[in-house]
Image (cartoon, rainbow, N blue to C red; front, side, top):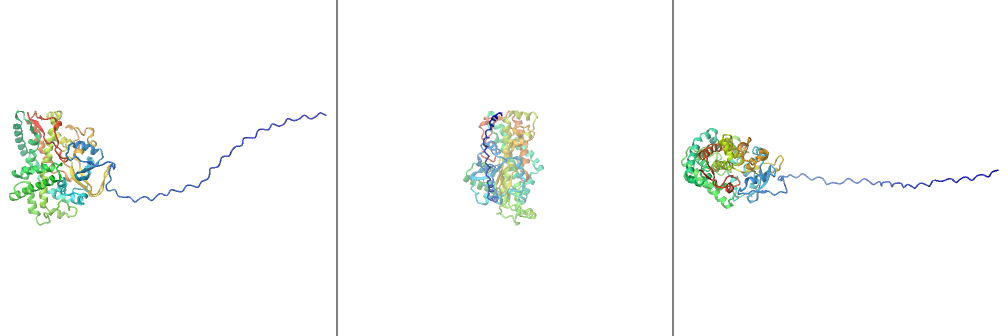
Amino acid sequence: MREPQPQPEPQLLPPPEPQLLPHPEPQLPPPPEPQLPPPPEPQPLPHPEPHPEQDPIVIDLSGADIHGEGARLRARGPAARVELPGGVRAWSVTSPDHLKRLLTDDRVSKDTRRHWAAFADGRIRPDWPLYIWVTTNSMATGYGREHARLRRLVAASFTARRTEALRPRIEAIAAGLLDDLAAAGAHGRPVDLRESFAYPVPLRVINELMGVPERLRPELRRTVDAMFDTTNSPAAAETNTAELRAVLGELVRAKRAAPADDLTSALIAARDEEGAGDGADDGAQGGGGGGEEGEGDSRRRRLSEAELVDTLLLMFGAGHEPTVNLLDNAAHALLTRPRQLALVRAGRATWHDVIEETLRAETPVANILMRYAVEDIRLDGGPVIGKGDAIIASYAAAGRHPALHGESADRFDVTRADKEHLAFGYGVHYCVGAPLARLEAAVALPMLFDRFPRLRLAVPAAELRPVSSFIANGHERLPVFTS
């Protein structure tokens, strides 16, 4: 027998490397829901700022750079917070669209005593330099029916028919002044066009309309000029206000003693014949009450003595100062832009074009004080103007707004297709004397440039200085050579 062969030992595979099992993720309990505090009760924001981090723009009372200031105001949106003398705050509205809405909004008032919180709180005192601008008892500060009552008494004197009837007299006044200008400028002597022509044309017209006696005219002009000077100290402004009211009181006494066919006599008759004994007491504050009285009461109650005096102030001031600046600015614009004047002389633009473009680009009254929010008013794309806040209508800034006039808004261009402006206001407070101002300019400007075809500035334009006012927009002097 054969011996059995030994079998090879089986080759065992090495045991696999032990695979570590992953540790299961610890099963943590879900985090608890965060406990948020309850939302706070909404708080009213009566005075929110469009740019809370920005300080109010302090208005330059000297008016040294009205258009530069207007650009800074526009840069802050449709309404910017500004500061007036004494730290008084207001909103300057520069957007033409927003201005139109506010000027026709029943929630906006001109009644200082009823609707300006700072006045009601006693923060606005008689020694505030701008006090007279916000406290007159006339249609300028009337609200609702009260404004309509006061405006009705004056508007009849400035209808289109009555205004046009003044054309021959305006032509005669302008012709006489041009004769004087020619004599004063003879032999190459410079003359002040503002003082010798731009000022006396509308001043004589309004003096004659109001029947101001010759002896009162110099003092009335001086005190109204001082009222427009917004650089006056508080003491000087308060003294001037007293002197202005005194000369107006003397005018009333003179016309009561010798009434005539003039606006002052007509207003006195409205006061004396219809106002006495029907509730128009001499201590009436004016400008208020329209919202509470019935239509019958509004129609019966005519002028108080305070309303009479302040209506005369309004008529005299608004009846000449804007036109002085209109004539001044139009002449300056053409004398510093000979190509624009050439367009007019060639018939490619009209004097109407000159007048409207001047009203737009060099608005005669740059800023108008003051309106007030009767309740909170939210501006589209802008801030909330809080109830009781004061509002300045910044007409000069609005006239040059790029949103309305594009990139060329700062350029004077008589051929501009759209010359829209707010120089005479808008809505129920639109200036009743606007047709007269336009007529005076339409007569005086062509007569001036026809009479003196070589009219030119006597000093470099850079040397001309503005009037000391952030309200009025004109030149202190406008020296010219007439030949």
